[in-house]
Length: 624
Image (cartoon, rainbow, N blue to C red):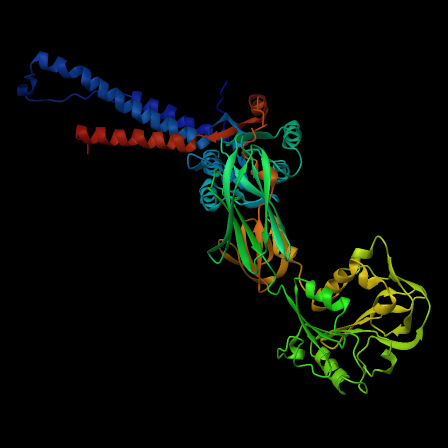
């Protein structure tokens, strides 16, 4: 039952004006006697008088009615009447969770799931609106704004290339609503690949009387995509999966600088995976699948390599052939120059070189100054100067090391030679020695030099008696390492770990960057110094970068490849597992409330209309 309460009940005293008005209207004036000419008694035709009598009475009563309603209305306004109306309080606050993951780019008949999601989002706006983008990490892009601003924000949102985390997005929406009445609308294809189970979260929210609506925008898109890229310095393996129920033929192309390097055609059986291996091109390149299908985000895989993928190494030795030279020559990431003292400017291939322009200089089994083809006096001073200016040097111990004047270059103080068998064991596990982590004592030697590591150096490996045998140190801008294993008395040079050790040591000295750090998956958050970052679609200045697009990112003077590479997100043919909500009516009935609707403006509008009508009536009658 609708009642008419009043905000100012004392204002009802204004109704006295109605009684006064009626009293004055009913009061008749006292008749007066007047003498008039007999001519005035000539009346109009009785028929004509009867024709207008009804109209005159009606107009007289209408004027009374208009005035009465106007006075009643003004008296009521003085009391401020209002009515209580029931309405859906959930429309006061709306939180939209918009799925912007890679699978939302899937198209059917040229219309993507994301396009449909935007249309649905615009329809559910009401009251104050908040918008959450459901990526692998949910992002709040709008909080507590009107529908006009929300429409503007929605027009600027684009689908990303990340995985989906709807569960955490729902929990975030719950925090935004807090204790306020409202509803949460999730618009997605419900291909959730990360985060807590959405059905569990929805049940939790429903138990707290939160309205949660799921809007499913999935379609019947089909896909064959790149699900994995294994990028190394030397080669790359690409994995392609056919998610369809029938076999599909695809062409895999390797492209660099818009030029096709190679291609191959493969027929992939239904729900199967094929792989293809190719040499990793230097710089930026990409793998392309043709023909394109309903999801293009995984039809291209980008590849990036460090700016420098080969290290120039100078080996100074009087040995005509050695295991070390063979190991370095076989390394794909090493450009090796070998020189035989005393001449350091012409390599063994009779090519002229600049010895101190190399990334690393290795001194291994050289003849001393006083011997035939011995090292030129002052060579070690030149090497020391090279190191202090930023170069890297590795000095290998040899039988007559105590007699060779290396100046202050070595990171150890050499002592007398010790002729006894000993194990050589790892002291520090790092990128150089990690291959020996399971078997820390990786080799033996029959003799070695006693030594004491200098202050500030790091011992990587030592003998049984803790004599340091592999030591690393820094000098000014450069680095120096001491290799204290006598290869002639040790079997280390014949082990499979020998070339790996030298390659790792060289990369460590130079600070070679791992190619895996240049090839990332979407969804990664990178903290950097605040700077301008070029993304695949735009540029921005930031110190915290979310990589949610596929393509090439540029910052810190380097280029990074970012790809989706998620089998679950690419499986767009999976049917939606979301169940329709049947509890909404029950929850809405519990969420309804009464709203005080003030009638002052409505009544004033009617009074104005009555008075306007009265004015036109009086004017028509000729009173004004």
